Amino acid sequence: MLAVIISILVILIIIIIMATAAWALRSSQADEDAKSDQTAPAAQDAQDTQVAQSTQKPAKKLVWRRFRGIDLVYGDTGGPRRSAPDGRVTFAGDTDNPSQCQKWCEGDPKCLGYTHTGNEEGEWSNQCYLVKSYDHTIAVGNSHNSGWKYYV
Image 1: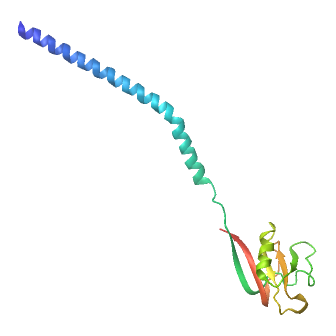
Image 2: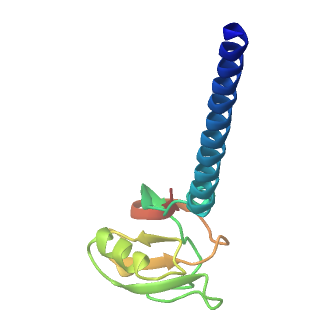
Image 3: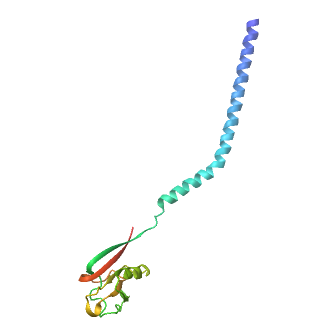
């Protein structure tokens, strides 16, 4: 008889342990669900930010390709200190410094490049022309300095 009572007590203890474990498991699962409900929007926001950053184009940096002895506006203006009638090449001004031409071009959003005529060109000497179209004429010009914009 003692063995039957001990067996029943062991079975009751096992049932109590199983019920406690099941209750603890349900409680922890409910806590995890509540936490995930709270963190899901934050996780989604973080994921959206990563996607946006990966697809966003980086800011482009302006770099110059400079050419010595190259005239990017040969025959395009019709005379010294003139702009092309169609606006594809414009006279920017007189200067003895090619860097000033580059500054003028940087300040003009339509400018693609420039040519500085140098100081050995007679009535064309020390002039700056801005290229505003891909339709322009390129030639060798010994004292010319030119530059072309690139974005990287």
